[in-house]
Length: 128
Image (cartoon, rainbow, N blue to C red; front, side, top):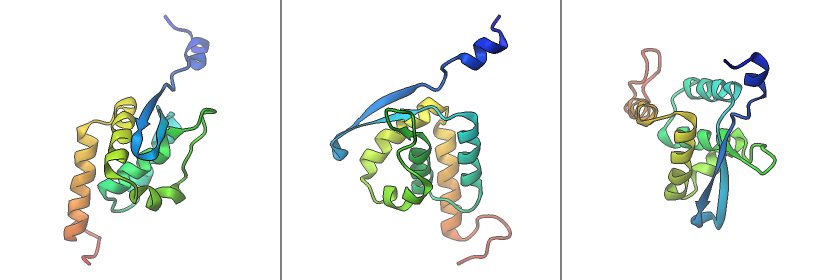
């Protein structure tokens, strides 16, 4: 059985390199820590979010440099939403797999996006 020390010392934040020809190279995608995943989940629940916002937020939370530091900040969300959908989707698929997000998470984000666009997202959200 693993000890507390062994668990805390385990390098469990794995990463994977993803080729993105549209961007002229590759990016490194990482598993989120529990703290990062909590922050990501809170940002997604804060208000009406589209699938593009979900994907861009996931990139912000998982794309890292060689030193393990995030490449993007939340201030980059709008700029990332303007990038090639094919490139973003390629990286997002790896981020989803590494972080245990499946089609259920994506479908929930899409459902929220559709509800927001129809003006029926939540009982206290005004219709636009």
